[in-house]
Length: 253
Ligand code: ADP
Ligand code: MG
Image 1 (cartoon, rainbow, N blue to C red):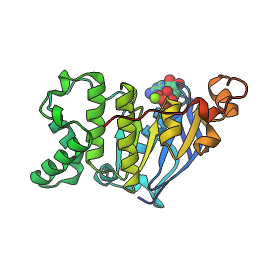
Image 2 (image 1 turned 60 degrees about the vertical axis):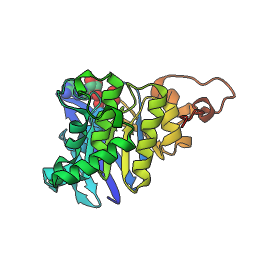
Image 3 (image 1 turned 30 degrees about the vertical axis):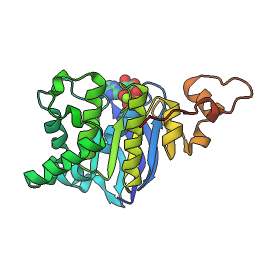
Image 4 (image 1 turned 120 degrees about the vertical axis):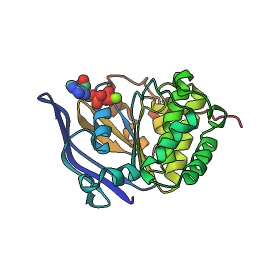
């Protein structure tokens, strides 16, 4: 993928406008953070981009309609990580991560090799043989991300991938997403933590009530003006908004 474009995207559910006239553009190598209050339409936007939610408007991958791709082609190019993944799944971690390669229809040895590498990169080697059902919420979230990354999708759509994680694992997950993008792929990530959004994302899209309030660099979007409009929060006098959301922690190696 070189470029993803969504033009005048709209979603209506039960007579309600959930997403309105939304335009979005993303280049390979970039991470776009989607932020905004609860119920803004962030998950709906990701589902529309994943092709799971019917939507008006156009979604173009390198200029071609996404809707024209076969399900298998789409599954190879785009991975969607749901906000609340499956809780019960009586399979080993290695088996679940291996499922991320299903769309490739490759030899079993190739899947095993790729899965081994992904388990190592995501720091899940130690959990490989564990039953998914017996993991903690945070461990489950990391396994589902590893499954999505294992398919090496050109575009990863991740809905609150850090929600259940302690701070160290939040940083690790964001680093994995950044590495994914630095390898020439792209990611759209829904985040509530504005520190993570400001630190890791190249661009931010701020949604409220189904409308894109603004889109731009973290410096442009994380401003007193926009955060006040979006969240009804006020910044203390004389503070730089980016300073107020600075992330000053890294993971020890
Ligand atoms: P966010 O992820 O930003 O918190 P969502 O995209 O999940 O928001 O939801 C946006 C709005 O759409 C909410 O008001 C939610 O109640 C509504 N909504 C989402 N999915 C449905 C659905 N299937 N039926 C009815 N309303 C829905
Ligand atoms: Mg959501």
